[in-house]
Structure formats: C-alpha cells, structure tokens
Image 1 (tube, rainbow, N blue to C red):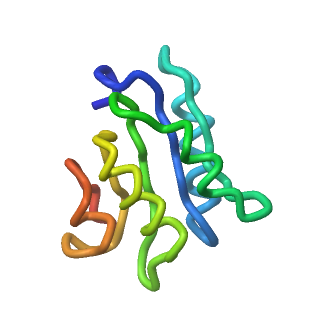
Image 2 (tube, one colour):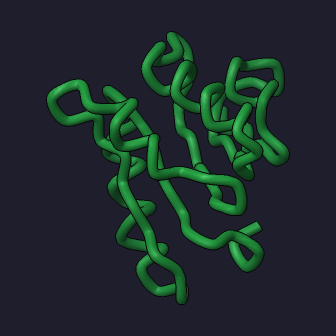
Length: 105
C-alpha cells in the first residue's frame, strides 16, 4: 500500500490526533510526500479536497468514533483513494470502508 500510493495522508481527530502526529514522524523516513489532515479551524473538507485517486489515507479512530474522521474517510473512499484504518473493531465504521485495517485492542 505504501509503495503504490502517490502520496500519504493521515487523519486522526481528538485523542487519535497524537497517534496521527506520530505516524507523520515515522513515515517521513519513506520516500513519499506525507500530509497530516488536522482539521484546524474545522477545515477537514478543504484539506481532504487535495486527496485524489492513487493517494493513501490512513484513518485512525476508536470507539466512540470521531464523526469527523469517519465522514471524511468515507468521502475520500468514494473517490477511489486507498484506505488503511487503525481502529478497535473489525466492524468499525473505518474498517468497513478500508482495504486494510489494523485492529488494536
């Protein structure tokens, strides 16, 4: 997934934001452009408008699921973006729209 992606976008809202920020740091060691979707000033839609087919979105949320993260992930999944989720259940809203999910308990 990482190798085939044109660019990598990471989203995590609320308590998942710290995890998303850590992924930015870790993934800066791969030869890809990495972007954090932070939603600063509630600009999730504006930030996600740059995500296109061929990009990878890593979405991180666990119960209670962030509506911002889940809605924005569903929006880009419908655009043909590669989806990877990190979540707490194989039937979470993020897992349902992802090609690959890491379920963390």
